[in-house]
Image (cartoon, rainbow, N blue to C red; front, side, top):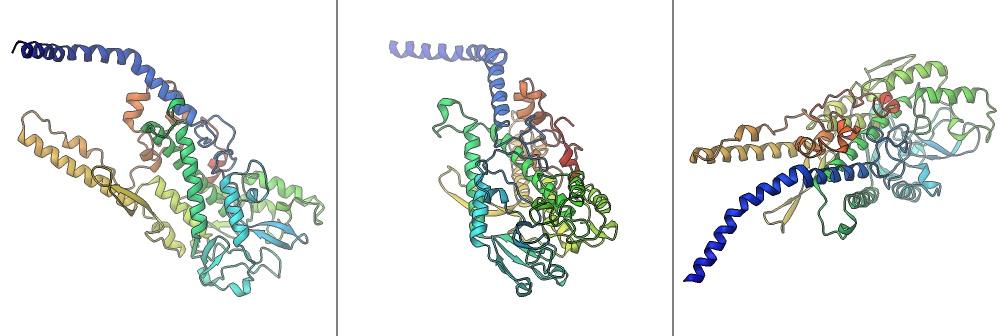
Length: 493
C-alpha cells in the first residue's frame, strides 16, 4: 500500500511541475531557440530560391535568367525555343531545306555541354519522329506531325503552310489554322520525368546534410516557396509565348526570342540585314529571310510589334490590318497565342473558364485539357484513389470542406458552454471564384509569413515582398500583364 502511495505522490509532483516547465520552455523558445530556428528556415529558403532550379528574375538578384522569360539558365528544365519555325539549313538566301518547328529547342540539337535534359530529350524525340510532309498533301484532318497530334481547318486553312510562290516557310505548321495541337504521349512522359527529377533535386536542397536519406519530410514553407516560384516561372513562359507569337504574325514577322527579346533588338538586326551581303552564308541564319514574307517597311513593322506586345494578355487577340492593329479577328490569331493567354488567365484568376478566350478564336477547351490528376488518400493513408479535377472543382471541394467544418463547429458550440463558435472564422478561409491567383494560393500562407518569417532576413527580399504572391492582392501591378513589360522587368521595379 505504502509503495503505491509513494508512486502516486511522485506522479502528482511530476504533473504539477509540467506547467512550470512549459512556461520556462516557451519563454526560451520565444527569445532564443524559436527565433534562431526561424532564421535558419529563412536562410534555407533564400538558398533554395537562389539555386539554378528556382532562380526567377522577379525574385532573385542573379543575372542567370533568360532575357525574354526571366526564367533560369541552369535548371534541368531550362528550355530555349522559339514560337516560330527556324531554318536549320538554307539552300539559297530564301529557300530552306529543313525547318525546326516551334517549341523545339535548337539548343537541344547542338550537343552543347550546357543544354538541359529537357531540351535534349524533346529535341532528340522530335528529330526521330519528324517526317517531311508536303503541304499540298497534309489537308486539314487530324494527323501526327513530329511530336504532336494536330488538326487544322480554322478559316478553311490547311494544317501546313504552302509558302508564297514556292518560297517562305513552306511545309511548316500554320499555327493560325490549328484547332488541335497536343503533345504525343512519349513527349508528355519525357517532360513529366524531367519535372519529377527537377523537383526531387530541389527538395534535397531543403534538407540538412544529415537528413538527405529520404526519411525526413521537407518543411511546408520550402514546398510552398517552390510551388509559388514554379507557378511564376510557368506564367513567365506563357506570357513571353503570347508576345512572341503576336510579333511573329503576318504583317509584322519580328521573330523574337531569348537572343532578341524586344522589338528594339530585332529592329537593330533588320538594320544590319539591310546593309549586309545577302548571299548564302554571309548573313546569320535567323536574319536571312527578314524580307521573305512581307513588303512592309521595317519601321512600320517595328511600330506594329510595339503595339501587339504592349497589349494586355487578356485583350482580344490582336491581328494586323495594313499598318494598324485590330482585335476584331481573333480567329486569325495563332493557336498557341490564344491558348497561352487562356492559361495565364487561369493562373491569375483561379476558377477562370478558358473558353471565354478560346471560343471567340474558334477553339474550344475540354475538361481533359484543364484538369490535373489528383491523388485522394483514404483515412490512415494506406488506400488511395486517383481522379482528374479542374482548379474550379478543387476550389469548390475545398470550400465545401470548410462549410462542413463550420457546421460541425456550430453544432459542437451549441452543445457545450465551453466551446467557442468559430464557424465564421472557418468560413472566412473560403476562396471565391476568380478572386485570387495561383501563385498566391500555392505560396507561403499569411501565417507562415507573419508568424514565422516576418522577423528574419528573408523579410527584406523580393521573394517575400512580392505582392500578389505572398500577400492577398491578385491584381498587383507588379505582376506583368503585357509581354513587353516582362522583357524589361528588372529586380526591384
